[in-house]
Amino acid sequence: MLSLSLRRAGYPTLTAASGREALELLSTRPVGFLVTDGRMDTMDGFELSRRAKSLRPELHIAMLSAVFVASDAAGTPIERVFEKPVTVSGLVEWIQEFSDKP
View 1 (spheres, helix red, strand yellow):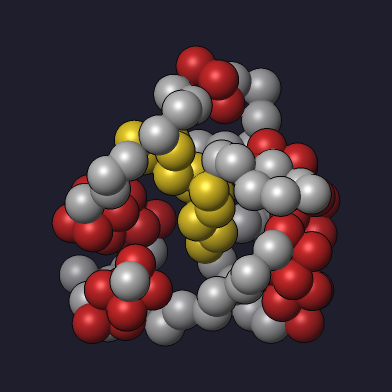
View 2: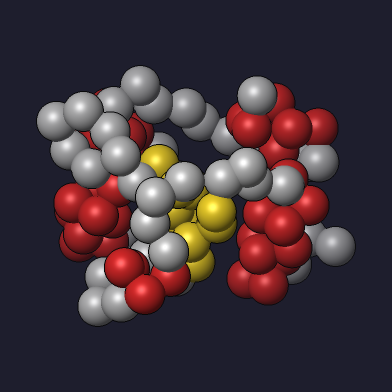
């Protein structure tokens, strides 16, 4: 649903079913932003963010979570934590801070 909403807002998206799949996409596709969930099986959003940033240092990373807050992300590559339920407009505003897209 989030991916569809972002596409409707004019942003191309890729989706991954796991942290491992996300890392595979990051290693082969041009990606500027990563939006991850905090809790995932096998690799949580914190570990994914660290590995993703090592692959792509220029990557901007946000986390969506019903459990974690911004202070939990201190010292990680996560730039913003959005509390669930997430508004697409809030996410788009965050993306626009870093992009040329109006």
